[in-house]
Length: 314
Image (cartoon, rainbow, N blue to C red; front, side, top):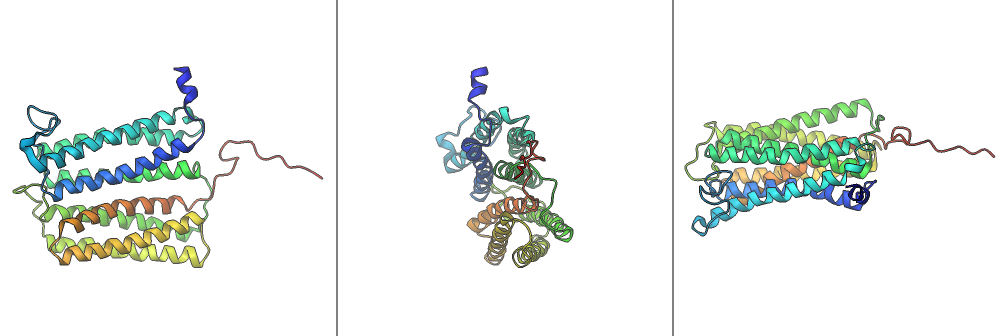
């Protein structure tokens, strides 16, 4: 055991950074494959859980295309679990120096089986739209946590000093609040639409046309807030270079997200556009999370618990 611990990294080295990236990418990827399950009508491709059928843990040839899609999405959960476990192990020796990294990795690791159970409940309840929506929202939470983990691995521990003024932080708080409303409204709107995941599955019974407007309004506010933040960071020379890049990325993704949303609403909700819209929402959340985190200054040696540099006299 002691030899294993000696092998583990004492710093956020290349392996730690790789698996931090892998954690975020895989969390976004499983949202994409989960969307594919619903949009191809494969939500009940495996009609029970935790087995795929009453007699088999894997899909059978008789289940055809839908069984392959649903079972493939279930298999990806194991990939996420492996990545999460490796991340926890890599951070064991850093748990005292960087406890926030270790805690985040543990929460992500515990979230994956939790999500798997909720995914199973969606199958056992015949794709109840409210449970499906909860499944997606919790996936977004894991994406945000993975984005925090990656940022802390790349940029160091949290600093107590802000790099932006108070009004700017207030604007950013409004952004995350309105974005959360937009995401939740998007989930409820999807639950009223035609893509149930399987033919004949019930929807939430709400007015889909009206909900599309309720979803679009906060999305436009999100775009306005991100545009304001981006202009302020570049013209007012506010914040760090990371903040400037993240705000530009968030602005571009939001514009693309709105364009895809308008396209799908005006063209009968084509499956590919809906899937892209779902994935872009997760990517946007990750980039906005980075934008919020980048509003603090880099941590000082004193804040990191390191001895200050000695001053020399001439």
